[in-house]
Amino acid sequence: MKVPAKIAVAGFSLFALLQMVRPSIPSRPASREVEAPPGVKQILEKDCYSCHSDERRLAWFDEIVPAYWLVRHDVLTARRHLDFSTLGSKPPAAQRATLFEAVNMIQLGAMPLPQFVQLHPEARVTPEELATLKSYLAPWRQLTAQPATMPAVNAVKENLAHVQPEWNGVAFDPAFESWKLISVTDRGDNNTLRFILGNDVAVKAAQSGNISPWPDGSRFAKIAWQKSTGSDGLVRPGGFIQVELMVKDAARYKRTDGWGWGRWRGAELKPYGSDARFVNECTGCHEPVRGNDYVYTLPITKATAARRESVNNRAASVDTKLVPLDWSPITLYADPATRTTAVLFGNDAALRAVNTRTAQAGTGPVYPAGAALALVTWAQRDDPHWFGARIPDAPVSVELLQVESVSGSVYRRFTGEGQMDTRTSALAAERTKFMLGLVPARMP
Image 1 (cartoon, helix red, strand yellow):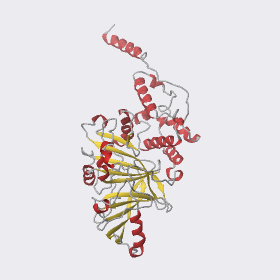
Image 2 (cartoon, rainbow, N blue to C red):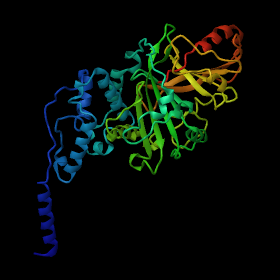
Image 3 (cartoon, rainbow, N blue to C red):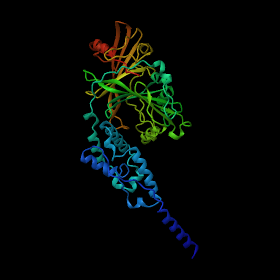
Image 4 (tube, rainbow, N blue to C red):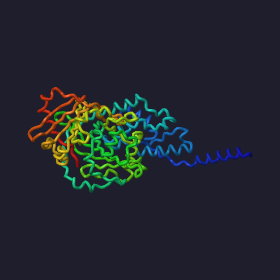
């Protein structure tokens, strides 16, 4: 037998032997499938169940080793992250949150995996199917904020330095409260309002456009509150939920895309993870925005960026002569009737009167003479990076309040274009009372 023939026979024999190395892919009946209408279930079964269920759905070419090994790895990994065969055993809110994440991954093109769709074109999610999933979830039609009270929270400011680090070693940073605003989010998918704050390094990078990638030393804090709807229809921060940190250190966190991740929940600021593996949830969620250095937030900045939808220029068209960039956010609210978001900023004198741990519903701080407040109102637009969220769009107005004494203040209102509002004198007393009465967003 000639050498080429011998090689061919040996190769075929090895190939045949490899087919015997076939670890199993467990397959079992669904224990409790996700609860959804038949039309939605049909889409999920067609496009997601091949990997994200306990059913074994392999094409004939998936059965061939070594492709089988890769497919098995992908299926088992996918099931650990999301299993539609067991999702129905979770509370309805958890099911809903999972579906929102799934739809968002589809919207961003991360799921189904592009390489999977190339070999399984029948799993491609059509625009009509995506529209059906979005219509079913309908975050702004079905989910409304319910009245909520601010829970009693013990003042723990002196103990923030002793908050336990996350399981992956990321330390809690007590300085986050002094960081500046990067953006704000109104989440209809989980009924929360959020501040996204950045430290000096992150703010400087955002304002210069140096965010591809973000420089080492950048830190973000994402603070979430329950929504609380007042009698005036405005949606304000209610109970504090959590603070999440992202810390950029490309060398230290090389294994997690250059970022350290941490989440601390509740008044006790308890680390979220049960072990260091929790970070896989963070990296998996942020993978679709790796082109934006794994950051979902579009910073409010006038800087330009090469990538589309990586910065929020329209929201940044506020005249900085009216609202200095070094002012800090005090609270926020959303108005569903007008689809707007507003943030109250304060100068240093105003912030000294703010105690975010003793704030009570219906009671605003007593601002001293020299305190200055700025209430910036933006129109809202859908967040291109997260289905079910809204972010600031073009500014609608800027309201300024200069406190000259305990009983006297000077109020001015400007339109989004920076022009003085001719109705200022008629609005002054009402809006002054409103701005002074805004309760600071509660911290733990």
